[in-house]
Length: 89
Image (cartoon, rainbow, N blue to C red):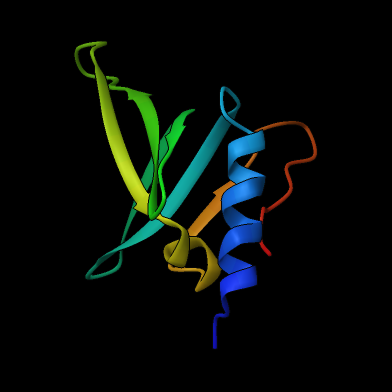
């Protein structure tokens, strides 16, 4: 069960990472993975947004995820680097 302090901790962690590059992986159903790479744009009370650049035309899109998605691991968030670490509470 997720308690309020876990949610607040996750939100605070993501707020401190605004402007950082991240890689988000989620389940798209039917053995499909949806992968977004971008920069954490903003944090709101229930969701956070990531600004991603599309490969096809180079335009930006903004995707949003809830903090609950991160806590329940429906969405995996990683920091792309030589030794990437998963962010979880």
